[in-house]
Length: 272
Image (tube, rainbow, N blue to C red):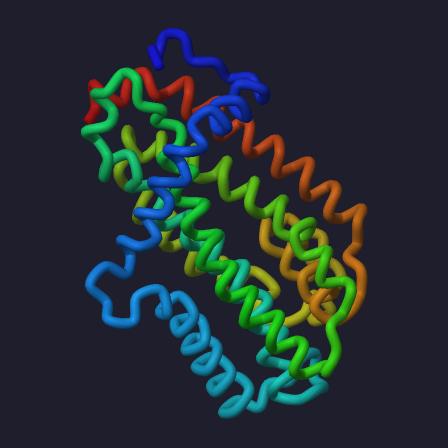
């Protein structure tokens, strides 16, 4: 696509992704498999890694520090609640740390006028989404085992996750383009990803936050999806109004990220 004719409308964004979906899926498949290239257990690591992290955090907080969810419950219940937060944080953190370097890693594609550069950050999101899905599988199985039932509310999981995925997409477009001009961004996003682990309600419920600070905590992009995923896993329907507002904000971020990418891509070749 000629950079002088790039389109920035939401319809152009959707049609562009659909038009290149075969290339997008193929490169995502290669990205996922390439991550475990040479590993004897291959994709099994996508299941083993979250299990090991869950075991470590549960042992430290639930075993050593005797933490209980909201001051009550068992270690197993604490582990389930903790894993809800860890799974969603993993998705956003993966995008924050990997998206900034995507254009730099594929600088050779920038010289190709016909290559759809906008799909490169999308590959980051899709591959991160795959690994999050592995964590969700563990989470759902754990919920069924602990509660000894399959909650019908589990069908609402896609609705809970969709706004966060859109947010990751817009953020990835923005970071991938901005890092071409400012390489320090990759260092900053790594720090932000680490901070979000403790600034989001992952190790504690929102009810433990002083009421005066809860609205501020609600601005954290992870707060609503984490809290609503916990509701769904626990057999309750999510707060649809909260999800609707989160989805609206995510759509705005997605489109703005796309606009930023399309507007700045004309200078990629000169910088890279």
